[in-house]
Amino acid sequence: AQSVAQPEDQVNVAEGNPLTVKCTYSVSGNPYLFWYVQYPNRGLQFLLKYITGDNLVKGSYGFEAEFNKSQTSFHLKKPSALVSDSALYFCAVRDRMDSSYKLIFGSGTRLLVRP
Amino acid sequence: DTGVSQDPRHKITKRGQNVTFRCDPISEHNRLYWYRQTLGQGPEFLTYFQNEAQLEKSRLLSDRFSAERPKGSFSTLEIQRTEQGDSAMYLCASSLIGTLNTEAFFGQGTRLTVV
Image (tube, rainbow over all chains, first blue to last red; front, side, top):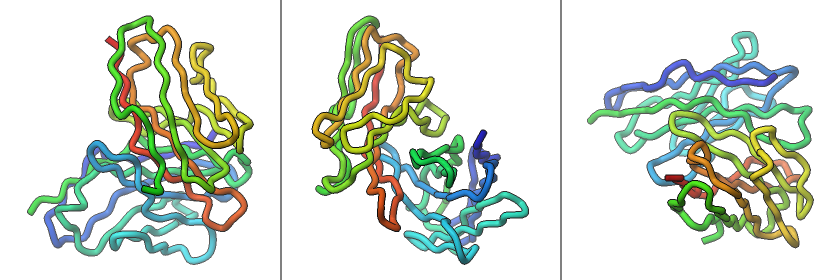
């Protein structure tokens, strides 16, 4: 069965510092991987995805993520955090063999960027 | 607004009552998904439609839940005889299958509170 683990409930970082939000996955075969962000009282917003090709994926708002097949990880990164990045971040996986294209989400990581 | 819209945003109901939620997907999208998100958890897949056909239902979707997507446009999710355990955020998402960009776009959700 597919699963996604986000080992940190919360990540705290100072504005201007680099940030990393961790994600590991378990899926048979090669996965599609996604990051979404959720602001208070808002729906999930798509940030970036890994489908194939370059292991470093760049997305919205300066975020990027690195796919590491040997470690089954897809960590979200940003070189310089902003206070406005404070939100709930979800990693998700999609099984390439599943024609439904449904997403399996992690439990989320709350990012708090302090001024 | 050309995004996914959901109505109502909030619903408070007494246990045992029936509720119905509506989702209007992005107009050209052929896939529509329902997810449920409880506090502190990531969204969990409930069901999805390809045009008007409901193709998969999660085991989370008990007999009290029914979803429809008449004419392949908007969708409704009905919960009969609500229970306190049904309290959650219900998220709708849509996507366009058959192109390179198949990521799902989410609505803002309907927060259900059963008292």
